[in-house]
Amino acid sequence: MGRVKALGLGVVVALVFLSIQAVVTVFVTVKILAENSTLLMQARSEGIDEVVAYAEARLMETDVLMTISIAASLIAILGFGWWYYYRFVRGGTASIHPFRTDGGALVAKRALYSIAMAASLQMLMQGVLSIVMAIWPEGMNSYLELMDGLDIDKSALALAYTMTVAPIAEELVFRGVLFQTVKKHSDYLTANLVQAALFGIVHMNPVQGIYAFALGLFIGMVAEKTKGIGYCIWIHILFNSASVALVRLLPEDLHGLAFAAAILVSIPIFILGTRGFLGRGVNVVSD
Image (cartoon, rainbow, N blue to C red; front, side, top):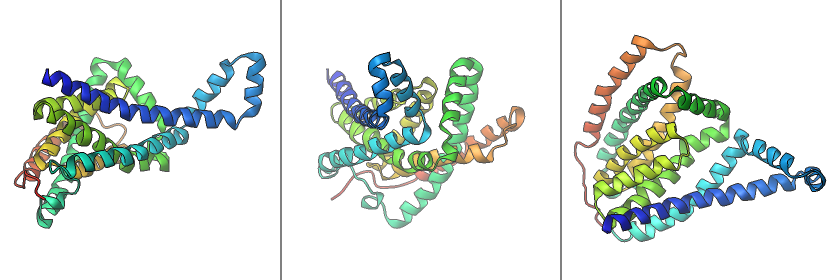
């Protein structure tokens, strides 16, 4: 019964996050339609199909979509940040910044090891995606079309969202409030599985969901080991930044043995980076 309650609470937290996105989307849609009064007047006589098509097209524009995402994430940061701070940080069960539990030297060491972890993990995820491509080409092609349509590396708003705003919001929601809420009513393993699964689901794309679930599991482990989300935010920022960097740096014709070699090199880097990061540190939050 305890795990069922914990799962239910986790779903509620995720739904609150999705509700924020939905409300912002509705607000932006109304604003877009209000700016096109001619189209609205035409809809009164000819039906709403053209209005719907116009709204859908505008919402899929990169800058409009990123504006919605950034606005929703900023609201989530404020709301869930307050929730996390007053419920868990002040309660003494979690922290936000790592200096509360680690000294400056350890924070610097972990920050450096995080770079190796995040970059190698992103490369390993590329290997996972290549397997998905071989097993499920239709789903992978749909994912690639979505990413190409967003033009993340060409939009300042998309870069800002991907590399800063999204990691902060998502860590506060999933490794912050959701993870701590579920763990309070169950245990670490259940909490980590629930937050990672919901993190994958809210991405609303099966391929994104796969690597979001894997990333969520890993960062959830970091949250448990460090008793906070400071490092989680940092690792998430690095992971997303590595994704953008790989798009720019990796040759488009990298495949076969060269790609396999890059994946194999990433494995020991990830292991060594993780061992170095978790080498030592305080695991109990103190006031």
